[in-house]
Image 1 (tube, rainbow, N blue to C red):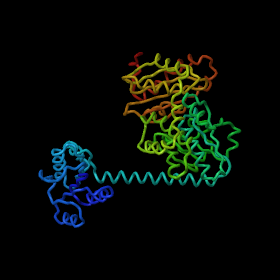
Image 2: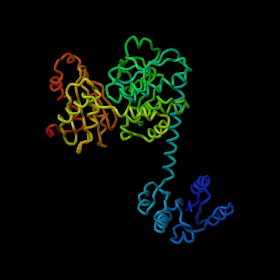
Image 3: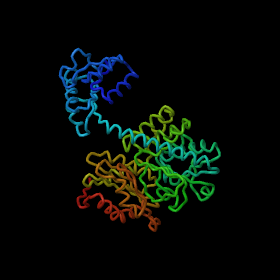
Image 4: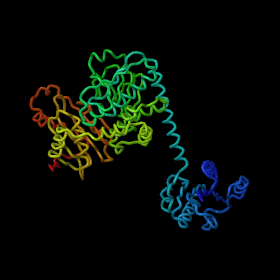
Length: 475
């Protein structure tokens, strides 16, 4: 037998009707004689029995799946126990009468335990979020459809695949909404330094331009993707007029004067958010954009292992059949540059561990992208819960942090420690900070300068996370 339903009240009836779309190989047991007779009149196979009776399964075929759905807690528990004792291979889905009783059901053998009110609440919230997402997508579409001229899409400094692919998707959305009357220009500052990021841009032939006063002057509108607002990890000033902000980082400013704002820190990547827009609006996604968005999500979630929500996975599944697998393979198989290898070596040599916190200076670097790569590597060390790697460039001190400690939100800690003297932020599992050198930028020996000024800066961070400096031991 495929299915057995024990207890055919309102929930049982609804389960029955859903199962009938698939099969009629269903048996129902209920102790209400009238209800059983009604079911038989409708040609269903039903038995009038007490589900708490140990003999309730007599002469009934073994089910593949049993639904235990009565409104009586003791009867349900007894039924689960009886089914599992007679056939341990049967899959049992049980109804918990109250949310606190789930553990008891699992203890007697239930495979899945559902609390109806909880299921309804989750479903209601899911639909509310979906409705909100749909409204946001259509609001953005209507806004873009009314514009003419040039939209400048600003990525964050040293753009990565998440911000670049999000900019590409916004370009496609703008073109579709305006029917080609809106020209989009992707603008960036800094460097595309990580070897995979360079391959990503080159292989997908992504057109990006340096953000300059001349390029800014050509833009009638400005959008920011994968950055919380103007002047936060991008080349814009904090008082610049921006029309659109789309991001997955927490709110870093109090502005509300944007024409369109969508920040969703519960998503693992801005590329996920942009994919949802395209999906909601039924805009065709070409192979290059699909490949870029898929890789953007994959890269920002570290292969779906970091800050990944169920929606990130769902949207990635939507993109996967549309991607170019050969291009993805080429992007992810790039060699490591010599400078990156040297930075990683310095991070290993200079590491210090304090109560599960690892700190490492890599000194002067030309390619800042090597710093987060070193942090990604060092967080894997045994006994390390949080890794903070820092280095100095011609213009700033750059920090990258990775965290596995569930008690710590490393992004908030970085913002609290460094937000007043630079740009900082992130999520619970990763954070970053950039502190401008200002008058010190002219200093020739950057390694000595870093050694001179780093102690008070790190001391502030250690105070916030509760690390005692005197415990420091070099490893």
